[in-house]
Image (tube, rainbow, N blue to C red):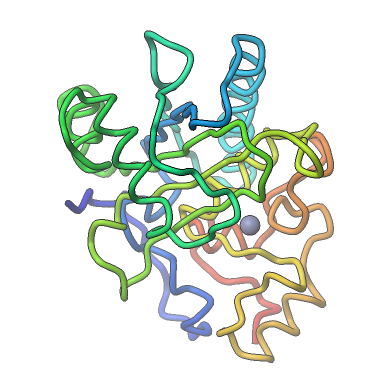
Length: 266
Ligand SMILES: [Zn+2]
C-alpha cells in the first residue's frame, strides 16, 4: 500500500544520491501537512510496562510531537502530527515472539510487529492491516502518511527503519522500535530519542561520526562533520532535555521543511 505524500517540490539541485536515499520514500515520505504516527506499547515475554512507566513515556511521546511541530514552524513549514497511543483498553500489547533489542534490521522484528498488529485488529494481519483498520475514514489519507513507533520496556539502542527503494513494499509501512529502560540505556530524556527516531522515518540521517551513512561520498561526510549543528537532535539524541535541541538545516532539508539543501554541501 502506498499512501500518497504531501506535495514537496524540490529544485533540481545536485545532491549526493546516497544522502537523499531515504527522502520521499515509503509511507513516511515528508514531514509536511497532516501526518500520522501510531505509538504502540508492547509487552514481551520478559518485560512489562507498568501504569507509571507507560504514563511517563506517553508524556514523552506527546512532548516529541509538540516539539516537532514547533521545529517545523522555525523553518516555515508546518506539520500536524496526528498521533494515537495504543492499546487503549490495556497497558500494552502482549507478544509471544521474541523481541531482540540487539537486532537492527526490520526483518528481525517482523514477527512481533505483525503479532502486535494482529492483536490490535483482532485478526491475523500486518502493519498494513493495522493502518487500514485504524485509520480508514478516521484521518485524512490523501496527502498523509503513517509511521508506527513500537515502545518496548527493554534496555537497548533504539532503531528506526525508513523505507528505501530496494526493499519489499511491505516496509513502506515504516516503523521504529524505542527501547526505554534498563542498564546503560535507562534514558532520562526519552522524548528526544522519540523525536530523533520519528525524524529518521521521514528521511533524516544520523550526524554523529560513527553513524553517518557509510555509502555517502567522503566529501559529503566531511562537509557534515565540519558544518553540523552541535545541538542537532540527529547528533546526540538522548543526553538532554528536548528543549536543548534543534532540527538542523540538513535534517530540515531531508524531511521536507526546506526545499534547498544547505549551501555548505558539496
Ligand atoms: Zn539515529
